[in-house]
Length: 305
Image (cartoon, rainbow, N blue to C red):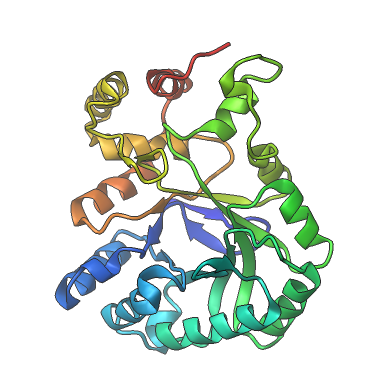
C-alpha cells in the first residue's frame, strides 16, 4: 500500500483509510475476517467515530482485531467526537469525556488522530484548545484534526489551538465534487461556480491539511452509489471503459480518480465487502492520466467553461 504524510505530521499513513461505520453489520467471524483482510492489504488505518453504532462499532473493532499492545503498535487509529443527539458539542468537558470513552471501547491508551466531527455553532475555541492540551500532555491523543469544516472555522480554531490540524474529513466523490468544480469555474455565472466551502480544497493544500474524502462512491447526501446506477449512464460507461483498460474494477477506478488529485487525499472507504475493499486498495497502484481524469469528470455531467 502506498503511503503519504498525514498533513504536516511525520505520520506515514496508507492512502486508503478503512472506515468502520458499518462494522456492526457484521457478525464476529465476519468482522475478524474483514479486519485481517484490511491488514493483509496494508490498509492499517482505521477510521471511527463515537456515534457509529452508538459506540458499538469501536467495541466490535477492538474484539475483531484482538486488541493488545502488540496489535496496537501495528495500526493507526482515528476517531471523531462532537455529535450528540439533537446537537453538536465541542465543549472541553464533552471532548475529554468522549475521548476517555473512545479509548475504553477501543481498548487502547491513545488515539493517533482525533477529529472534531461536524462544526459546533456554539464552539468556544479556547475550550477546544484546553481540551487538546490536556489530551496531548496526557498522551491520550497524538494528532488532531477536523471534519466538515471550512477555512474560516479552521482559522478560528488555529487562533487558540497550538497543535497542528493535520486532517479535514469532507464529503467528496466524482458526483459530489463542488470543491473542485468551483475552482475550475472561477468568475463564471453558472451553478458550478458557486463557492460553497470557502475554497477549502486550496486552503487545505496551502496549510498541509490532508483531505479525507468520505462517501467516495455516493451521490447526493447518502442517496445512493453512482457506480452501476442508471442515473449516471455516461459516467459508468466511461469508468467501465477505463477499468477495462487497466484490467481492474470500476470501484478501483473511482477510487483512483480521487487519488490522482495532487492534494494527496486519503479516501475513507466505508464498504464491509471484502472484494470491494480489495478493489479500493488496488487503486493505490493506479495513476490515471490527465485525459482520463478529466474524461471521468466530464462524464459525471460537469461542463468545462
